[in-house]
Length: 305
Image 1: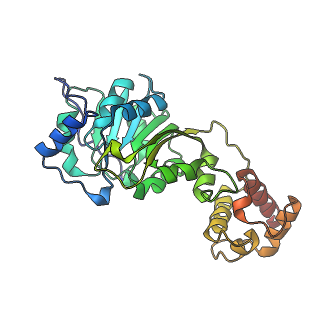
Image 2: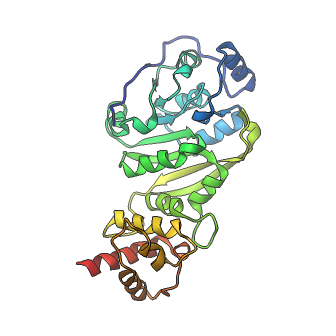
Image 3: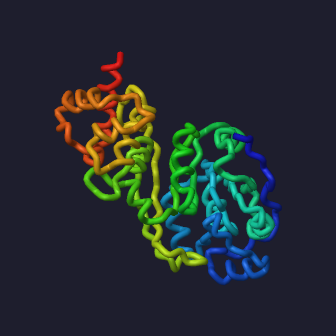
């Protein structure tokens, strides 16, 4: 990953811009700069002050916090974050938004903007530079097409994190917090719950954005576990088994794992693990809890010793 490069150290001390959560000012700025929304970046800007306030309160920010905002857009939520937190680092991929942010964030002395792709930023280094390596809080209005890579990237790269509070598509938020036996339950549910406690804090209708998305959104807070909720011998193997189980969710766990070319676990080993846990060998992955996946993984690892 390339090192994060600060391209704009906001912001000159001066008169602050009006509150952008008022749709009037958002539209004025968009027209002034003749900004064209880019579908490839999934740009839907918030225009509801109540929703912005709900996100800020749900993130439980203090003046001691350093916040990473992913995709600030024109700076609507960035303004509110700067008032609530000690420092804000906003990472924006669209270079066309940088001159807009220079104007809309004028007057705030605790914001830095980085013109980079968040998936290529070394966030550990960013936390080191802006927060002395201490845990940061992430707040974002995430585009649907990179929601999972961003969230899993934050967790899997072991970035020092306290919490992630994000706006996502409602169906994605639902998938993050559900348990076994539901149609939305899957690999994302288990991965998120392994790293954090998920809680949907608000549902947000399409009319709170410009342009309006076609589906509803939700704000979800992921509070990182202080201690992992399960003990697993090989984390990587457990997630391989989970992915295999949900890639072929209508198959039994034994067959799904047996059909996965990238997992060196035989059907016999998985059958023995299930038997040792007192589970039927015909069970599907969608019926198993995170704790059960961890125990099955431990049994498989022990068989291979």
